[in-house]
Length: 136
Length: 136
DNA sequence: TCGAACTTGCAACGGGGTTGCAGAATATTT
DNA sequence: AAATATTCTGCAACCCCGTTGCAAGTTCGA
Image (tube, rainbow over all chains, first blue to last red; front, side, top):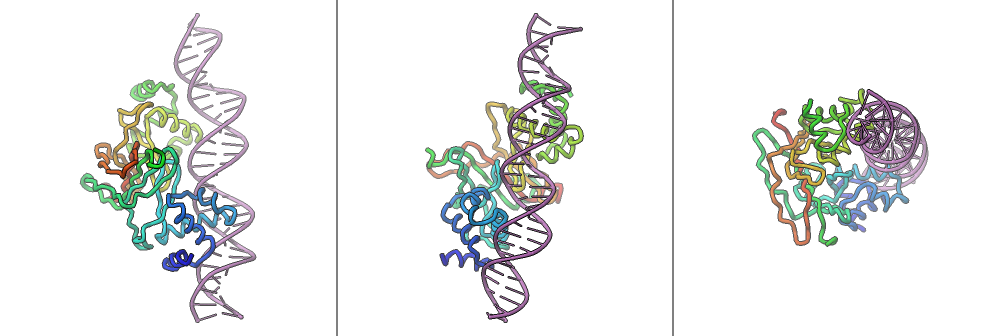
């Protein structure tokens, strides 16, 4: 409870019930969420627009990061090392084709790639699709 | 010219000018294209819906594949080994943050990843963002 | 407790993508 | 070459995603 307020405070955000609820949804659900997921869970309490803006704010402040997907964007909590100035996301995302859940594999790093001459890589995004442990 | 018709024929598609034009746009431009790109190039000749359906058809037949992006889907030509039954896409995509182009690095394969117990990977999608050779 | 600064809800909008249907084009059969 | 079956296209309409402007409400520091 105070944990949430603390997180918001650290990122210089005013504590509002919407931000607390969105943040706690991310913490409880653990996997990557789309705007639609959040609207389904919180849509009766808050306007869609507010949820969009909350996501945008959280993105900018480094609280969440984008997770690529072949059918729409999702978002997931950043590790604690992220901030407004610097994001560090070289971990792998796994999307289960059975249950549809997308999860961060925080402790698996994207392997190094030897790019041809002239390419200057900045960000890496690896999505692996398949069947997750829960779905056999 | 006959090359295009041949490709369509191989995939059991009727030859129409729209399909020929979309296909030749992919071949000429070489990089990954969004629906918007195609509409910009061919929109005066064909309806948006027709372009959408052409992309969908090409996807199903294994002529093009989806390319992930942090701001909307793109499509790129498949290598010749793809078909309706089997797609093989373990190559890397590079998106330039300067010119905005996304390209397939066909000859660079995604390195193997050791997933935790229970994960059964099927498809891999690696997007690297940075600056491409053309943009210094 | 007051006021400045920020956040929310509402309405409205634009774009992305899909569907149903009638008419047009393509392929196939004779 | 003509007729038929099949497929494709254009149009209209629709829904969903995401954004913007503005007025009213809320937060927080002085």
